[in-house]
Image 1: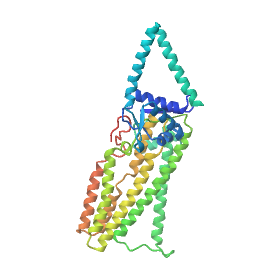
Image 2: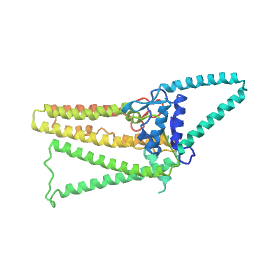
Image 3: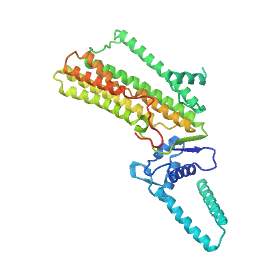
Image 4: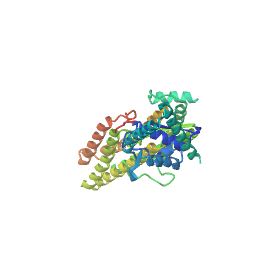
Length: 129
Length: 260
């Protein structure tokens, strides 16, 4: 699996890296226990600052997708496998709420779509500041 | 000579067929071709300088070569390898700087999202063979130095061990530099090319130099002695395992699911 950083993209490099790694972990392209490149190595390979890569790794760790094992490096966490399950549970709770409110399913999906879009935008804005 | 001609010539010389020629790969191969020519030129210049020094042999400088013994022959060859390794390392360093200049103009950079190790880049089997050949050379030299019954034998063992350590040191230094250098790639084909070039560079220096030292020791130590048989056995064993390596086109297994 590869990660790609575009210099001219409006998305900040740390977010490009974080989102690609997160996607690969969630869709299991990166298996549990896979060791990620070191921060310095990836920064050199992608022409990024060390802090940029470190920030991506930190956010992935906060999301429970990777774990740092001291000097051994950063590994794809088993918690990453559970993230789908957590998302499914949250979706079930949302579906129950929507049903209770009597909302149309199509409208409920639009609300989710808008919320996801807003969340992504917020993440990008945070990266710029 | 333009870049395309350089690249065509380089690919033909190295018998590389499965390289997708993106603009980045063409630029990198052209750089490589230029530095390989510079390396060969430097080797020839060094040989010429050594040849002249040999001919003059201190008649002008007052310096003279030490009396030739098996130990000095082995040490002289080791120093020669050290010098060649130094030149190769320096050329790789210059090549790496040129690659970095090419990389600065890229609008997009790619890399593997999983860690690569020495074994995944070089091939675990090849790496183990090199460890056995180089480690074995040092051990044989040390054992001969410890067990030899004559001063000349001990000196030869020590010289061989010192030579094997020098060769292993320079190989480790150059290979570490090759493996640790940053990736220069802007898409998947150029990433694969980067990995192939890396393997080829490592293959250039991962030669069993102690095997040559053993051959020199055998020809100089006198037929029939225990030392001769020890060095001959080592050289033969090293040759056999070396024949089973597959540089530089080893399926190094870089990439997803790679196993050393």
